[in-house]
Image 1 (cartoon, rainbow, N blue to C red):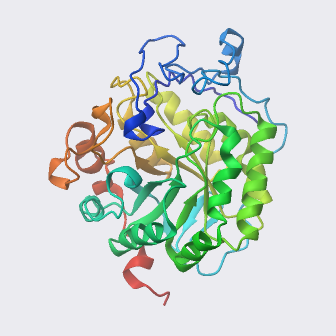
Image 2 (cartoon, rainbow, N blue to C red):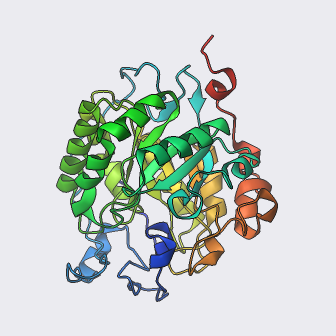
Length: 388
């Protein structure tokens, strides 16, 4: 059955999650459906009953629009994804969980790092991130990054026993650019790097690709093509697919994720939502994540912070921590910092160091009962390097 409970998420959004620091713009906070000065939503209704009250898209030449039109409910029954081929020599998805190459379940706990702009090699941040006990790092990259640079930053993450999740940031909010990201991934020099590291790597096809106008058919068709092209190029690692509407539309992946998963010959896909769910009660966060678990959907929270897109500290991040722990859902906090402008309150650290963790970043990394330090488990494959 499709959804019995809708998430009404007043998702206030920070451009720092979708643009390099030089492109960050101030936003216009508010408690009703408005847009930022970049055209991104500061309030999003996930309840389809509210769609008729939402303004139409902006001119295509403007920044990403604030339309919250959602796809029609899927009539497809849930797909049983438990009986799947296991890719040899890579991490893999079975049911709704991720496993290392030795068959050990991995619950992701880590942080995002804007490497392409603030720490190209990871040399200033990865060892500090590892001090939290994190087992993963989501590496912000883009198509200007060289294959050699990609090799270096992946190597640095693995050397610190952090599972690298590399994502391309170029198409944030822009559905038309999805296949151009795939063009980068399937380049022969990039494929060579991915294959070199395939035993310990996840590829996040694109960050927050698409705004609120992307339909279910577009999502299914676009990502089926993307996955097919990546597999045809010889890329076997788990693929991470962000939801649309700058990543925070959990409805889209709940309705269509299992369909896309079945189009992958390896059935090796994880879906990601960016939980900038402003002013959303803990009970609704719990209901949505429980629903996703009941759907047997391979899901992770690819980004979240205490601040939403308008820089207000209005996200119940502690509820996200608690609910993901209860349902064994992985998460990666946004963002290690520094560099989130103008929303510096998204920076977990002031200078890349573990010692400078503060406020919500300190809680998420260390002090909350469901923090990284209190819940993360090392990945056995990194400890043993072989499966005995």
